[in-house]
Length: 393
Length: 223
Image 1 (tube, rainbow over the protein chains, first blue to last red):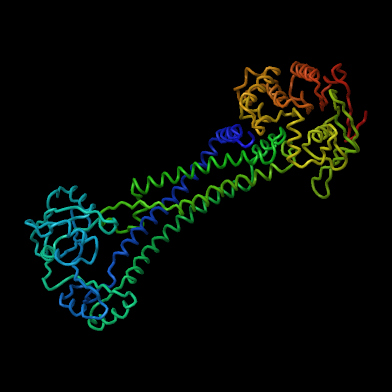
Image 2 (tube, each protein chain N blue to C red):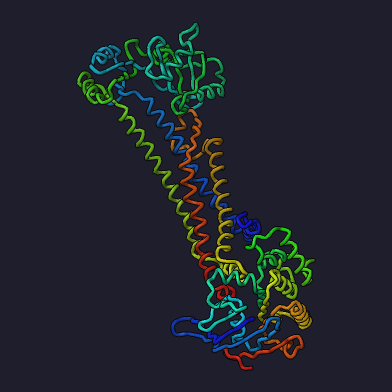
């Protein structure tokens, strides 16, 4: 009997919240907004980090690019044989890739040219060449989900006309649509055969964009890099680690913006907490005095205040987190997402992958709900432990 | 029933400013007795009531109720003692003005976590006894002074306390309402409640229902 929840106390707490509607609604609103802001920031960050990890995992171990006047130019395909002869290199492929600016939509497509009869340097591309015929009767392409949406929007339902460097058009038919593990990676991709790629961009058959190299023993990567540099001093040799550093730098720089938002949110929250903890109004003090005078113990008062603060903070937390999920995964985080995907104007839109990070949500919970409850209980405890006579007179 | 032995009470405003509210108070009140403490404002009447209700502690001396020393009770035990034994009617009623009549009256029962029908039974009993049941859903601040007082009395009686304490109960009432209050006290006395009233209202002086009048002046018992 004694252990059951005291519904009268709970009812008293709810009534007490409603009696101070405007004040409690204001606190609730601020609380919801701060939780929403923080969890949105964390959800976007986590989703992008997930995308980034997948992108980094799919990067080649070594990429060889030729430079001229500091700019990347096409490499000779016969370099491939010399690289394959280096001890420790398990495989090497030439790559054909680039960007095509689609002026009607104002976006860049990433175009990849693949030889259907060779082993592909990426598993996702291997799947594409196994599933779709890029060299059929019609010149065809396989596009990412984002590209498909943009083509549909611009009435390119069956084919697309690429404008070649000489100004003529190259019609390529839509052969299929694919959606990869990572939207960042696959969303804006157009896959065509190597011949189609060369035709669109006017690249000779003995040239390629760059060369990717696989190494069996990852410890040998620095040695192989130095050997390639010795063979081709005019080339830039980039490893996965180099890519990781540059991606991470961009990500960390953008995280700084989020850190700013985070600090502002935390500061605002602690201002509220400080205001709460610094004392009760005379009316609140008098109420506690009355409760003590009619026989409430200190723990009855604290229990009631606990229910009150828990109801406000917990429901504000749930509402804030719920809104942030809606904002990030349904509305695709307008504004916030653009901070990270800064050049999104030139890219196809992409949806953030759903990442449920229990740790992050717990962190926000423990940074907000118990802190608020504590800030409510401390001044109530201070008043409740005074002589009741002192408080009500 | 209620015994105050050599009670002193000093309020310390700061190191150099001490106010002696009570000096060497010795008082005995029998069970079922109705006692009126007379005296001007600041004479110490209210302090005596606070000590009997364990709302405050004496600086020295003992307050004994039902053979139990209540003057040194820890805070939580003092609350339980008040809940079980004391019904306090404050001068300004000390009701929560934004709550309904019913919610104010059942306030002392909330920590007991009683079954719903038991709370309802007790509420109906006191609200009928003090003629306030028809206003049970009204908000306190919308009631008249007399109605507020009846709510305060109902709240003081909902736990069937042995002792009723009233501090300047008629200070905010007109003559008619004051006479009604005396009638209520007389009814409570018939229920064998021990009643202590602190007042300087002459309406209480020389009444049949009052067993004893005790005059307090400057913290001392005069008669």
